[in-house]
Length: 296
Image (cartoon, rainbow, N blue to C red):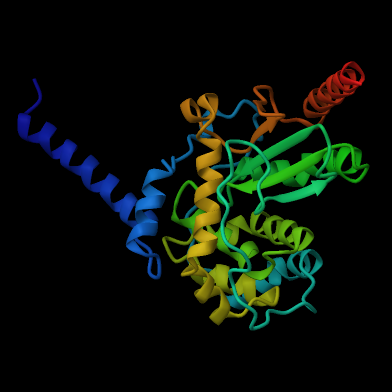
């Protein structure tokens, strides 16, 4: 039989670890007490990536030292400058351009980033996290195919929402909202840049803000504005509501994981390969056309 003191010690360690994670995520400078309570109530959940159905053969990450600005620039300059139009720099306009309107479940709301035809009868919502390696794989290998077939052809409404699972997600997700709150295309380019440079800012022993700041500066986002956006309650509210909307769906709440997809309000339970997602979207388009004829 195990020593009771040993068992109690394990329990204490678990409690301390939980409290540490909570304090890192929820008690951020510049966020009001009321906002911290809102974040807690959003039931933000740490993702278990082993639940993903599609293997991506991503190697186990290795913890590294914080890369220097020169190292980040050397390995990411071409990617970042291709993704983000550096001629569009930040201005002194208000950081929060509009009040937050909470979404109703999985319906379209005013703060959504919508691509394609926002009036389409087929709406797909993608939930992605900045620290998610599977999301990086999806955006590099799968999303371009879906974009070409369905978004560029205006067949569907494609909504991208960022899902927060930890403090790293929160700090990284601020960047696209900070620089281009009203520019959907630039928002997407910023998010792709963050995903493509995960190795530079994620694995830094808690010093992730330094490389994130550098990535922002290379793309034209000043250090001062990024720091201001980290304290912006409006941005935090948008991210909180994104999480809340996803967690209203029982199947997501019971088994959260990113990337996650909802097609016309139904959770996509199959793998997210281009072929399988295409079949699901084609089926939804056929159903929408049939229903339209019936209603007419």
